[in-house]
Length: 160
Figure 1: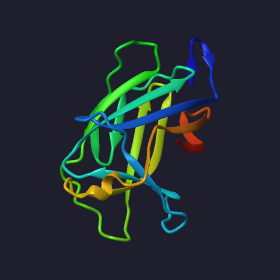
Figure 2: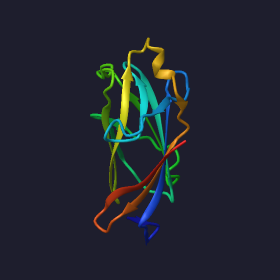
Figure 3: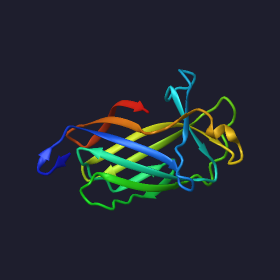
């Protein structure tokens, strides 16, 4: 991946997800090793809109974001800032059954490479207050490495 004429081999990606209508942070819960994808589950409501904010350090250019089967418009108000925003609508996602989780494929593409990552999620009916129970998600920080062919790999994931 080339940045300002220099090849970069790693970067940080900070992802924030908030309720688009209320601007409230979403919740997550620790699940341990009960499910295969992640030790934590991110909680969403069906039939809701979420604001996804991305920030890269150093600046990495991305053009497309795909979440759970939806291609999202990735907006960047300040070119060369490494900051992006998208709105995601969960229409069509049915509430997840008890003791089950939904794996959401997240794909981020840019001229320098493609990042593929899976987010473990649980969907609740909009009227179910369980979606708000748990720790509030400030952000997810991904440490990423880039190979010479443009494949981006997540080497570390932190949730705060």
